Length: 73
Image 1 (cartoon, one colour):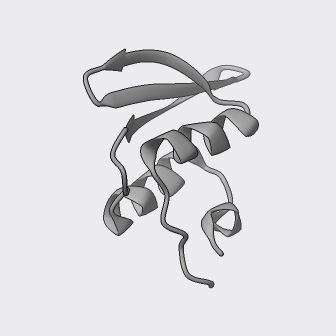
Image 2 (cartoon, rainbow, N blue to C red):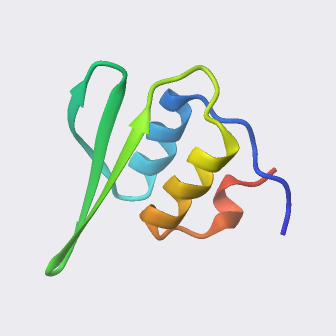
């Protein structure tokens, strides 16, 4: 496993959008991204901070179901 990149909230939203997620709403500094696949919907909240903390990024990776390699250097 490689090291995770440092993402801003906007960069993370852009990456999720490229992989099928859509922004469904925003409240304050948090955006909710969703991806509908068949009968299920994957929902991922993303904070619009300048730098996403490592634990938060790991949680977003886990919730999104995307491969970790997309988020590494």
